[in-house]
Length: 177
Image 1 (spheres, helix red, strand yellow):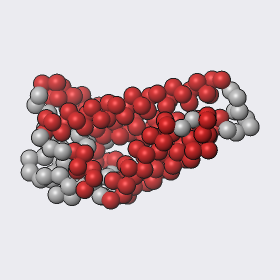
Image 2: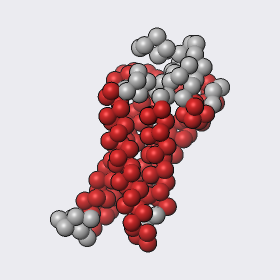
Image 3: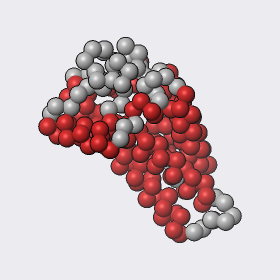
Image 4: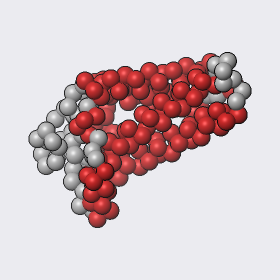
């Protein structure tokens, strides 16, 4: 069953490449670092737009769940009884939001640092670097969550993000919930 549409998959790749590019570059290659930052901001903006108007599994309204559902799902994960989702599970939905917000905040602070009003401000440099480390930590948690969930569900979630398909049957969000 097709779950991840082409825009979601392409934006995922662009966002991952932008984050990796920003981390692999820096003051020595500032032009490339800035380009990676702008690419990350563009990918976040496009993903936000697609999250409002895209397909069912791309829309934030279908995968960002409330605190009660998220805590309940986290407890189910801890007890080994978590249900399978075709799209993002409640923790995965909030991880997507956290990653998008952290990448956006990192990109915005990077841009602000280049403006006349904020050039050379130590607190902004510190904030930009702290946010970059937060993005890296979130990426690590994201990868760990994908590996754990894929193992638990016996499903290759990395391959699903490449070709967009997941096996149907037995998912709690399969009927449109």
